[in-house]
Length: 69
Image (cartoon, rainbow, N blue to C red; front, top):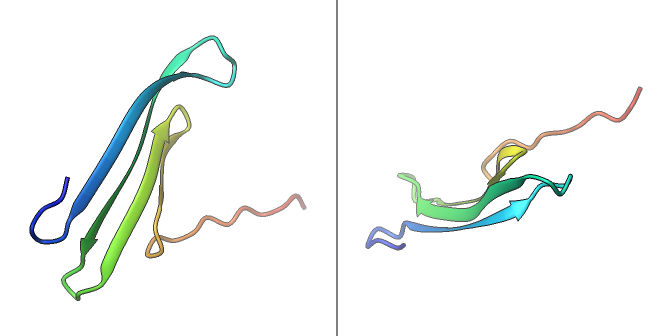
């Protein structure tokens, strides 16, 4: 999907087996982008599955996992 303001959205879904191999789960992957009110391009890609919703974008904070102490 694209509109005249430059917003784009794309999403795909599929049914797949979990890592255990005995249960089906819906997986959705997609992205969207737009131009902020300040004129800055913003892009987000994401995946949603049995592990939850995970988004990536340069404007989003990064999660830093601490190594074992």
